[in-house]
Length: 233
Ligand SMILES: [Zn+2]
Image (cartoon, rainbow, N blue to C red; front, side):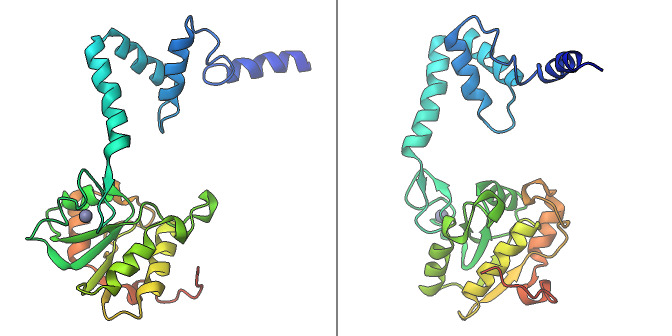
């Protein structure tokens, strides 16, 4: 096949989402808005255009409310002083609830995992939100997470048990192990979720029954990694 022909086919193949993505917009403002939406995770150019056209049809006041909500969110949101969860106040609702078991701290990756565990109605302790997991490929090291704050919290006392509730991926396991090494000298119990949550599953996608059972049936962390030799720190 001649090169020219191959080039045409190749261009056609690329066209839908890459090469011609922004060629046909009749307005720079429209194009700019589409670009912003398309920069969000999981949103392609077509979906971005659909969302922007939808906004265009709304009343000016509704669009203003939409824009202001995003700006307010970024400007005014706090991270809870205790658990690092996203909050409107210095202490989040969970940390300021006197009915929660303060001696239990469940370590999770992000707010979506807090919401997933809260959804099981099986856990009454507090949380610690890491803000991610250790992932050398993505350039995320222990210093990028709130592990220092977690250790500080344990050092201050009042915690009997740290429950490691990270995703059962290799990155989750590495992070569990790193935290375990950091905290093992403190007089606390370190547990991890029972592996009712499948290996390789993202925690937030686990169904409520599996996740609920996993948090009730947690096991000592030492048992969960027997046979593991390497130390990621
Ligand atoms: Zn909190």
